[in-house]
Length: 257
Image (cartoon, rainbow, N blue to C red):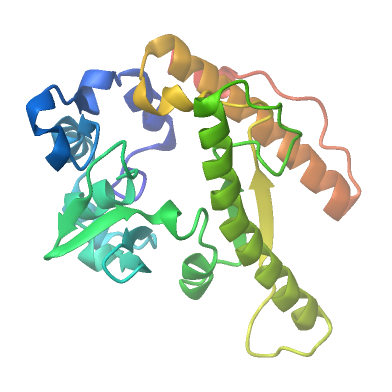
């Protein structure tokens, strides 16, 4: 949305206006269950994206955008640039397997890019990024996790661990490259500063299927606090300075009152 010309604060307004009915619709045609490709229908999400995003502005924007999706016929991660992005490309990048159906783009079937890469760093680096902020949606790997209480929680944790493994592999590669750059062993690449922000508490798995104001406000507040903690940690580690106390949220609460 920012790439299409929206002010960052408008993201908050858009998120707070969201409801489950604007994202998906539960399938009820049980007699066709054997042919389902997802539990939910995402036609509402496609319409919402068309209302929120000006694709022409995305294509013309000087801000580089990369959208990833998993082409499951080949098992490869596809990276799409500004000039080729359409609403179906964005929808494909959100097509969580089983929960949502795959998305067809130019004759190919796609699932969420996270199936192959939770947070693909190198498409951003190839686009010229020298500072990256990775926003994780799960505390797995960053904070101790509780023992799953049931099969659903166990399956969710296993899935999140699998996603985290791909990200940690990317991050390890980046650390090795940065080490060689600093040592003068790699003169073809530049040092890339990477900061990771992870939620300080587990987010219930069913929240990816529910959108309501109280839940969204909670996630906005959690994201604000966890990001500020990451900023303070980054400042202490890299500059030896005190980032100070967490500021109040007046910089954005006026938009969500």
